[in-house]
Image 1: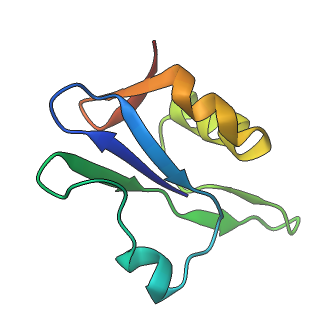
Image 2: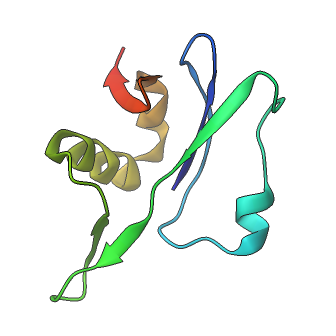
Amino acid sequence: MIIFYNKSTGKVAGLIEGRLHSPEDNSLWIGSKEENDRLVFTWRKRDDGNFEPDVDDLDQKAILIAIDKKPSIVYDFSIRSRKLVKE
């Protein structure tokens, strides 16, 4: 999952969905690189075969799982200190 956001406001500018990304996905950009930045979240396969976000913060993990299930809710969040926070 790749989330793009405005550097100055933290407002989410867009999302590339998915748990695994190709090199082509990693070269995509939403908006201007001068105005926007991105967070790339990797997912790992658990022993039971399911995937989960590869992050230590349990709150962030829950948010990422919710966004994975319903991508449109990403716009309910902004980025502060490189973390997703509810607006």
